[in-house]
Image (tube, rainbow, N blue to C red):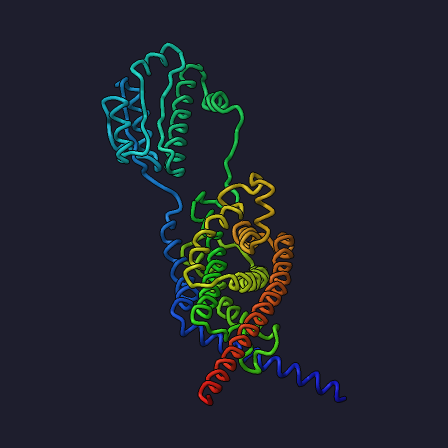
Length: 421
């Protein structure tokens, strides 16, 4: 009976101490402007700015220069079709190819169409006549728009020429002659083919991780810069226990990012009309281990942060690599095996992949079992590593405090002896 009462007393004391640490951490968060900005202001407004920039989804009316050395009916028809397409517009007519290249160098146009002088003549002789397309490769979206539009126009004109030469008597014969294999293009998942729907979901998930790293790292850096070890050293009885310290601090960030995570994954996509097919229960199940793993990952790394500026440099340096390693901007199957192994260390890798499957592909929780289990493994691993690192920090701080206390006592005794003499 006494043992049971002692166990209940220990549990109650642990819960009380954890709540006390949570309260102190929450107060410190709202008093620190840097932590407040990165943990609340940035997650609230940065996704809106980023989503607004990509809200158009696709690029339209890419300016193109034309060098028409043919001046024929067929070249003018090609130019009219290019200008009528939604993706490109004819912005300039150049006298020669060098003039077109200079216009591209000045960024006045993103592509150049070149028609040779014998363009229509070769076609009428039933010879193959080339149309040269020069594209600016510095921006993939503009290159895609110019190149695909030129290909579509050339195919459409080729069908017309083929129909004229075939001598068919019915439309069905013309259709079979120009398209013997019928196909229908059906975009899967990203039905708009938009850049925002492809990239924004990954960015929203990475924002959760990066802002958590910034907030936790800034808090730890502030404590070290001011030589205050209140976050690590048990200065009162409430800090007697590694688990209650780690759980109390993590509870503060978990409560804040439970709201931020719901805002980023449920509200932002609907504000801008992005694809949102995730079931709420499945999304909640994914966000729970993801946010916890990010918190413990950030707490573990925060022990390496000595100055506030260091964490900002670290996050800025790693943001793009984290995005690349998720397999969104570059196919996962094309990432080397060594780098794929490195990507397994970061919560964003499995969080992004799981969220895209849920939100953009309409998958269920059972379809992302691998990502879901990997996140829970990271939660357990980073939690125990954080406890070990915090334990080491506390022992180091205690030893440092005892050494300072011994030095103070020694100097006091020396001063007392000197005064007696």
